[in-house]
Length: 364
Image (cartoon, rainbow, N blue to C red):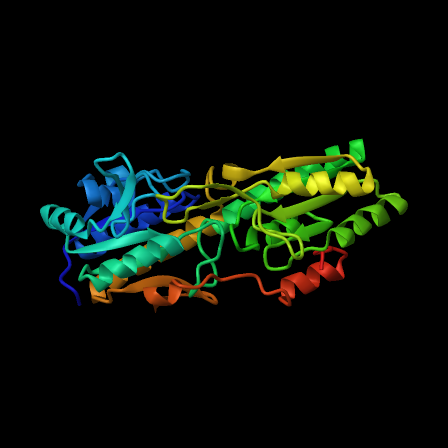
């Protein structure tokens, strides 16, 4: 068994429902089962770079299970191996500030680190391990695109939010005989669009993994109108693109660990459909609604299991590992298996085949 007695915990990257459930599980398990001290690092890796942290005890992690967001704060711009600073000319340049991280790590008397985040955070955490920091990971992202785990916490809550929106849009689409387009998050993976689209009765579901044919999409909408179904629900992932075309990029943030910000495909699709069919379209961009709010029961339970597993890994001295859901079991996998490639929707997956069987069109 490891002799770790004092460790840090941070949440990095985009926020999502379930982060507080994980923090709570890590802290309570460490305190009650192992007598460890838990130090909360503020605002992701920024807290390690700037030396901002505070102790977590049983009291200040109680009552946070159902809260959205993260009590520790987060950041997706502070990579200690590519830290953005302005030089004497006022120009942005990037530096390796790991020595500063190591110094603050030692000043805080930390012996290990629990990092909660997605692919960018896990990539940074693996670099930390390679530089001699004892660390374990917990997979988090609403996008569900992290390799080495079947599901990430936060995904189910985002799907619930998107499905509720689709349920509400059905009635107004029917009333006004419109095409309602809902743009979901997901970056380069279509998991949220796929699952919410199936759960919310989407007529057309467009994913990054399946470039769509606009003619096929419009033909489906016209066919529905001719059959008396004078409305259509289109669910489109922000990373979807037309066949032979490109994803719509909203902006670039150079200092971020993931500089590309997607967004706008919903409006582009609406304009294209209106031009080709003459049918009125409306667009709803769910955006950060999918990141907010109370976590679903599934995410509370999964987050709790991940947190307990992470502490178990610390206690056993299994560093460089990440908690992962494999089937029905939470297991340990090397962090390096979770980075370098994304977990994408397979176009021939069982879920897509089932959706097609009940009439959904994917634009292919």
